Length: 119
Length: 154
Image (spheres, rainbow over the protein chains, first blue to last red):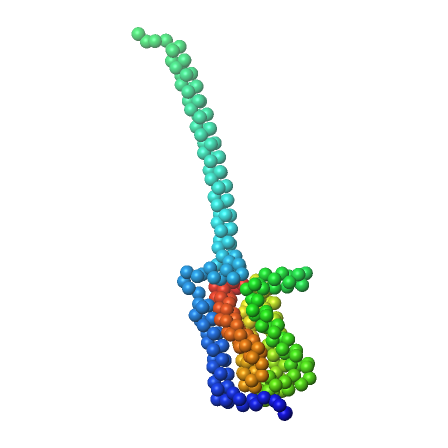
């Protein structure tokens, strides 16, 4: 084609170097992003909150465990309530027994007073 | 419903990924021009490209990269909490890398033919911007891998 620029104005070797250099640069950028900048630091565990930390397996497991703990706590509270009832019944029975003893003692005293005295 | 979700997802992530969207659209427009404009690579600036491949080849290759990049951006922005997003940061990184090839080829072609200084600076800046995008998307890909490894969606 007449009037078209000469493509060879940029030397072939320089073009090749620029091509390879540019693509190697892009590959290096990939390496930097993935292996250096993307590396999760020990204190950066919360980086995984890219979506939601509630979606992570450990948190889901923890929620299940806490639910189980809640059920166990409710069962323990109910058992404690039962124990308290039994203790209340026992206290009532003891009180009834004590009053019966008192009444019996009064009766015995009364009977003893009526008995004729010797000598 | 799905359109509303896509629109919301794109709007939400646009500020963080504006350069990726812009470069994907620029490549898409260039690919469409290359594919459908007769004699596009006969223009002086693209002589070096024409020497290395047909117009259809350049156009189709650029079109595939641009479309995949746009799809990955939509998926990664809209369906971030689903299994679809598992590999979308990797696709974004790979497409940014492949886009670099087109920007570099364009810049070198314009430089080699000594045609337009504006075109050269634009393509060179697109190349530099996509290098930056590669770093960011690779970091996102690593974080997605780490999140997967630590049990998300497991």
